[in-house]
Image (tube, rainbow, N blue to C red; front, side, top):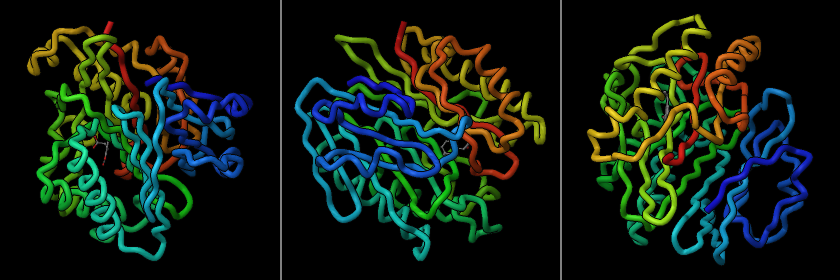
Length: 324
Ligand code: 3EB
């Protein structure tokens, strides 16, 4: 399976026959309406740094199967599966909604014996309300209940704010059995965060390793922020939040950490690719861009402007790395 990122002017290059998933990011959909075939297409309302639209396109050389229920769409090539939801949640309880989404996910992954390798949780008005009524806290509560009920393994994930009224959850799962969840030695596992951050902690791991015997293995790095232990560090200092985030990714992917999981292949943090950088304040974009463009070898970096899941977080960075 191959991931390619397309800018807006290249949208016409999409080959619907080989496409296993399209995720479009932007203020309003530009390609969604044109796609009539049964295809896995999700629109995520999020502002791109240059105010364009951007599509993440995943291709497969194998035949693609597509199905849809009321809430859920599934696309697969027999090995790799995309499962996606886009639900208008403006009149729904976020705890019940996330619970229902994850219950449906685990029903499918358990039935088909799939391992989840990567989940994106894109939540409208993520921190608009304060206290226990905050959407992110309620989302975490429902999600944690579902993980517990299904005794599910925590995979790599992202949890960020988006515009509009649709909560979007999408994931990659695989029939590959060689999947390992990783933690960062200087970060508390998110699923053990203390209750001051919410009634139930977030359900995710810092990375997922996916071993491939014939091609290169992949490390999916979660949305990573300036958190040490469970505390946000460098409050109100975007440059230091960015470098701390990069340090977190470097430590997570270091040989020393990977050997704790029996992984001997090398993953270089500087070769992180298909990078997404979520920046809370537009005014901080140039600072974050400079630091990231100096650090990463890939120029394949998408910068977005949106709320994050804690009011004091200014930046979150994710991507994936192929073994070298
Ligand atoms: C953190 O480390 C930052 O709720 O699924 C990162 C990745 C974060 C995923 C999620 C939240 C999530 O806690 C926030």
